[in-house]
Image (cartoon, rainbow, N blue to C red):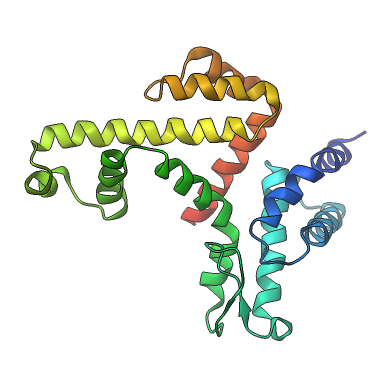
Length: 223
């Protein structure tokens, strides 16, 4: 079996997981249909000579989201737009395609970060929002927080590390039952993931796939 056939066969074994990923961001369309169409289009392009994507699972999920975006841009959707931040459709007129396309494409990634952020302490959340979202420097927060700029910088650095650790913990919880104990170990040491958990993230095929999916979507969000 060549690499292409093996990659497509691997998609078949991960179908349930891929359907679950698409279902959360497809705006009420049938995730099974979207996934099948995405895999079919991938197979056709590979047959035409396209190189095999590095992260085939992320590629297929993104393709399925593109199909959903195309549907909601079309007259068939009757101007129904899906807001990934809520569970039901929102009736609005769609005059701009790209924001809708971006929302559908990155909804799962953003949901993971939002959940990880909400699990941090209130002071950590505030620091991250002020420094990372609003791009404020530590010295601009001295009067509001009542502490020195250097202390704010250190606390913000620790908050970023805690956020990264929490994202890793949530990714582990998405894995198989054998992955979950490592999530508990990370929760116990949020500033420095323990060695056993780091090794598991590197060696476990499921967790490695989830990490690659998250990283690939993060790269897509920056384009």
